[in-house]
Image 1 (cartoon, helix red, strand yellow):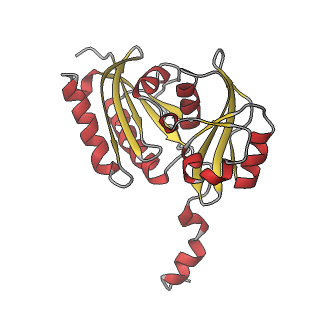
Image 2 (tube, helix red, strand yellow; image 1 turned 120 degrees about the horizontal axis):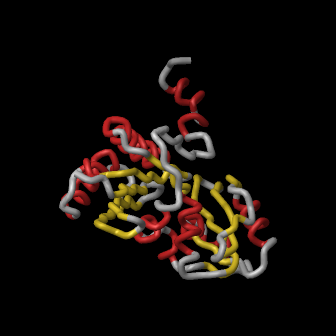
Length: 232
């Protein structure tokens, strides 16, 4: 069977997206909302996409995986599943930065200055600014910063447009700012944007690393966990 399809998977937040694409065009796709069942859902969704496309895993030419930042569990599960497919089937795999993907999705419809504010944990956000759309240029580094720092960096740019899960979780943080809060539809990429962006990344047989950016909660609370379990 000729290998012509790209398998794309995004599980960075609470929406899991799986798509099969060809040259940036959708061939089949499914998405569902889930926070804890990725280990079960992702293989089923891949199988469903292949069935919808009347194809098999042998037709996959390359694999595009969103590697973060985002949910530790979601990223770890999707990357583990796709890495196994890549290794066993000798299929090149590529990494998609989730913040870049959200910016790319937004600039499909908008222009100007956009800040992605993604929730990381209580009072902590992944934040990056972009100008666009032609070309899309990062105007700040991708940072992990608190609420006060988030306000300061966005306030330093005029007429900024802001999106992301951090905006939705902490709406009061942005109330008195001279910014435009974008519609929640921009808080996750469309399947079409995922398909098109997968054509822009590099692929190889080297398995990509997850883009965590911050320590996991387990690492931060390791001493307490050890103490509670009577191990220290």
